Length: 631
Ligand code: PRX
Image (cartoon, rainbow, N blue to C red; front, side, top):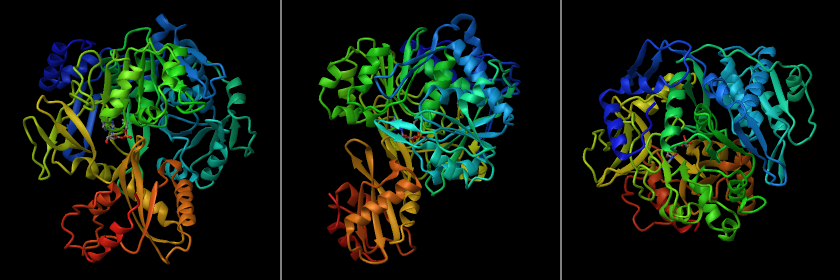
């Protein structure tokens, strides 16, 4: 495939991708290994939310990520695993070892009755075995559903049941800094409520020796000892399911986004090589968890399809101290470092001595993902980490888009801090006004939609195509709606301004306000809740909850703590509200709709202009809420 390496290349590739999208993607796809070539490149109908790529093509993504590299790179490191504890030794896994381990897990899954099309839930810490598990599912054609190992038993059970998973792969526990979390206990509690689960495979990570249920639970190592290191890759249709990944929605129920094999592989492989200008031999580190889409696409599938060396980091950025990332960069001579603005902002708070202690001269390219990066964080990252020599690629995309959509191309695009810049070749954005008309020209602002399909677009919401169609394809006729607002400046650079729907992004994690409201309402003292986001220095957005109780709370602080614990138990610690204000009512319209615009203003601490409140059922409630606002 031709990789863009100058701005003139970019312009040419972009124009070709718009004029002849099928030829453009067909040429890129030809660089992958197919067992059978496709008959037709694309069929689509956005009105009915239908998209298919590489129709009739047969392949297996693991042959592209592993087998095809064996001739040249069997002994090259595929995965560098950096443990959470810097005192422990890193593990280097070559492409040959990756092949063998993935095949062994594949055979273990098969021996427990997992077949092509079955769903497998993976709830594991960031260890190499997590990568083996994901790739093993792909190898045998089982659909993986990775659930971030910070979710509660209830959230895990909901996701397992929604996908009807047959098997769960987990570990006894995980290290989080110097703490241990008992994952198996959470899995036990979840699986009790999941009739579809027949088997649980457990890796030992924290030596906690949890109880094992005979006939259901199996020890990872014992099973691996019996398994063969060869397993034929299942022939997959390009449109067969590769994975389901849950993301928060504006209603309480998470959406199981479905990605398929062929298009996803082509898009993440192409964008990895283009955006990061990856060169053979380089070390690539994406700090996301594999439980999020960033980890799927740019720790595993993208880098491995390019034969890269990818880093998997088990730890957290602040333990044992704020220098942990920089220490690991020095240790492994990382060339490309891809992280989230929230991590940058939190490390920016600490002394630069934590950075200066380490040699970061191996770095060539920096990346950012997950939320808008503010200019201050961008400058700090550029100065202290990149030493003003490394381009920062601010990559905009979503779980639903599967891969990067709008982003600078490293060393090609002239950068503007906090701008995701231009659409990649193959991506056709449109900025829309509230009436649903496309706004043309530059120097404009509106809602971001995409006019034409790209190969890694999600194909549906698992088990609910109608919901998929309504959420993404009904706002703007014939277009995919992203849920984000954006600006296009005078030079055509895009800046993503944030969500325009009821999703808040806390530390780069999507949370639906309805999901948190439902969790808070579970507390017996709570009658009704409204949740909004507010600007937070480190997390980007924080969670602000307005809560009505049945009775006036006697001890507000104690009740706040109980509410936080309830949310933590029902969803997970990431969703805990930062601020809880007790109120006697909410600003509702006569039709009963909460006017969130007012609550957002209060949460932002800006009550100077609350707009028109005359349509409210009880306008006096606004005064009460404003007076009680938490600073
Ligand atoms: O609001 C956008 C924001 O994150 C949302 C997607 O979240 P998720 O599906 O969890 O995927 C995150 C990792 C790809 C988007 O709708 N977002 C993501 N990247 C950026 C961003 N906002 C601004 N700039 C970005 N670079």
